[in-house]
Length: 336
Image 1 (tube, one colour):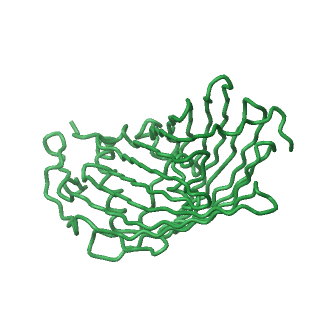
Image 2 (image 1 turned 180 degrees about the horizontal axis):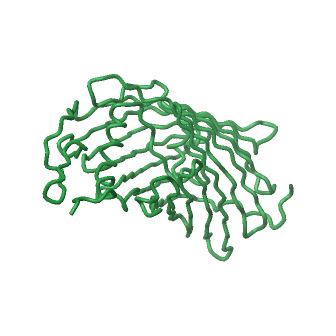
Image 3 (image 1 turned 90 degrees about the horizontal axis):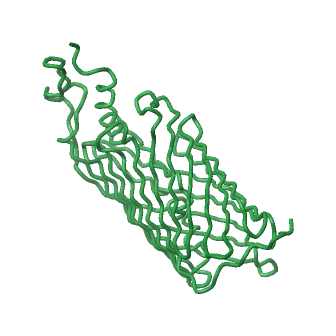
């Protein structure tokens, strides 16, 4: 008997390898498949950008549960509101991964100013700023490394390791900037928007090891268009390009919305493609009165699909929007 199989060893080593790359090199930010459901995480200028008085969001993601017993988990809580043209919000984001209990917590205050053109009130320009901090921590004693593998006795990870740890936690300042243009006229068929943001402007040192490793800036560009078909149906075409150092990720999405006029409700459904053969994502959702729910699932198409059996990430978002006024209905035949 040869002990642990190749696949079992590979699964056991994935997380230490990922964590070591995170701790010793310029790490990349996590990503959400439903990125527009937590807009402040993408662009500070999108703070308060909704129809209503205030918004509260819960966002949860679990990834690689088919590979490891302690998968990557992300939980985001956010709240934002508006005071005429001034918008304000706050979000808390926690990400944990693996047996080493690698944990990252972001706490950010967000503000934006929305400007409408005097002679064209449907054209909006917004600028946003975020200030906060990031706390990172890890338990090195809980990690398992390749040099600990002992093939005797069926294969165990019982040998001592030569790997040495560093600090168990560190704090990073967080500064993010963003800009947004959007057009809001439900009497028109086409409502375009375009946003851009720069995250981690100060590039703080993020390593837990005895070295210097800056958290690189992340540049986001996210265009899109909302198309009003009639009083019951609209769809949204949008995408995002995220570039962080030498890593570029592009996502394209199509979302359809079917409105039920007798009730304050709609059903949503759509599909997203993440480039570089990473994932295809299916979405389904429902809005009823002030609550919106959406569920999505990533089908992994990367080189890890042989280990993950093509299974990727499960994601859930719940949004509560308080509004004293019902949203403006879509015209049956919008003008072009």
